[in-house]
Length: 120
Image (tube, rainbow, N blue to C red; front, side, top):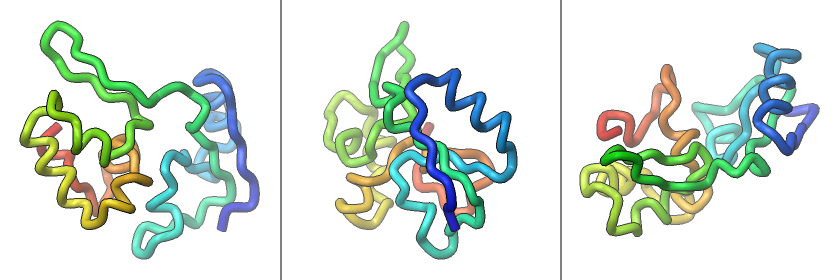
C-alpha cells in the first residue's frame, strides 16, 4: 500500500527520489496497474511522472518516438500511428482503461501483462 506520494517537477528530481528509495518506490504514471489485481503494488512510495512533460509523440528521422506518459486511447485514435501499434493498443479491453493507461506503464520489461510490447 502506498504510504508516501511524491510529485517531482523534473526528471532529475524523479531519478533522485528513485535512487534514494530504490526498491521501496514505484513509478506512478496513469495508475491503472498499481491497484489492480494481479499487478497491485506492495511498494510504500509512489513517484508520479505527471509533471515531467513526457506526453508527446515525435517522428525522428523516420523513427516513431512516444513519451512514457502518452495515454493509450489518444495514440489508438491517431491516424499517423502505425496500424500494428493501434491494433495492439485495442487489446487493452476498455476505452476507460486506455484513457487512464500510459504507454510507459504498458511496456516495461518484466511485466506479466503487456498489451503492445511486441509491436514496439
